Image (cartoon, rainbow, N blue to C red; front, side, top):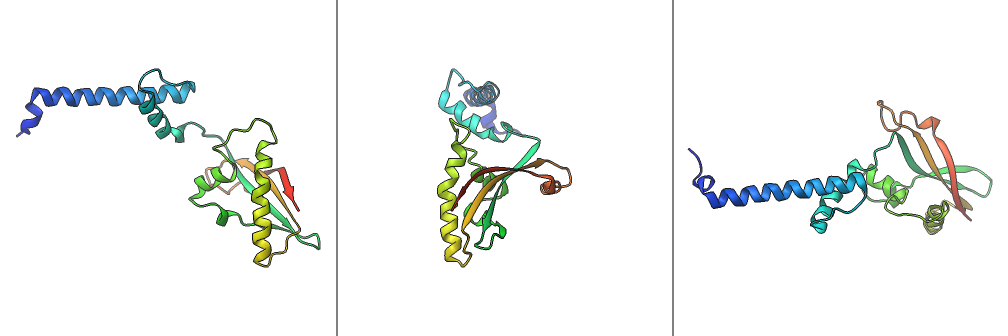
Length: 165
């Protein structure tokens, strides 16, 4: 009991051609992923395949996250919750927090990108009744752990990036 369309030779040729095209596009995406050079044929389709392979392009053994510290007039510090300023799930939120889609020409390029963001938080939090006089941005970095994302966070390396007053 086979479908009559699968016995049709024209149908088989079209189906085989689609499978070969799919494999060609996927190989092009893999080529671009591993070499970071564009594939020479069907650029638009292989670029799409390359984008679909994005989760496999930057896996690291470290966790990174933005930490914003707010200082009040008496010199007390508080960790400011920044999740509300970034939509999406944890992975997307962290990518947005660390400006993962941007390429910076100088080591200070990313730090400069935080100034308008920190200024916005300073004004917004002040309007909510948190009168911070200064905000500092840090990049927290810690080793990944099988016990979970935050398991080794207490040992994080805190790298100062910038501040606003």
